[in-house]
Amino acid sequence: MTDPIGTLVDAHLDAWNGPAGPVRDAAVAEIYAPDVLVGEPDAARTGHAGMSEAIDALHAQVPGTAITRSGPVQRAQDLVTYTWVLGAEGRAPVASGRDVLLVRGGRITSLYVLIDTT
Image (cartoon, rainbow, N blue to C red; front, side, top):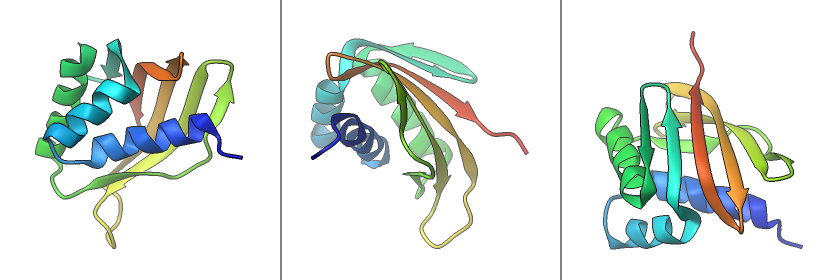
């Protein structure tokens, strides 16, 4: 049996790893609520446009990298969390952290990004 939350997390990471364009725009519209909140350490954005801006900012800051889930998806009611690493394939990660998602009606309504410090 397929886990819908696990599938949603996979789609979320695919959106963050994908290039800008109509395919990613369609994924953002499907995965995230129209008024989604993106809370990052230094920025807060809202809506589909805000989500796309956050993804574009990551790609500009660390081009050629991808986010990979590094731990299990954990869930308590509509709160979902997992750990991740950011890096280029075959190289040491450049960052790690945890995403905390609020999921309602099968869509992500909030994304909080926590970045590990060394």
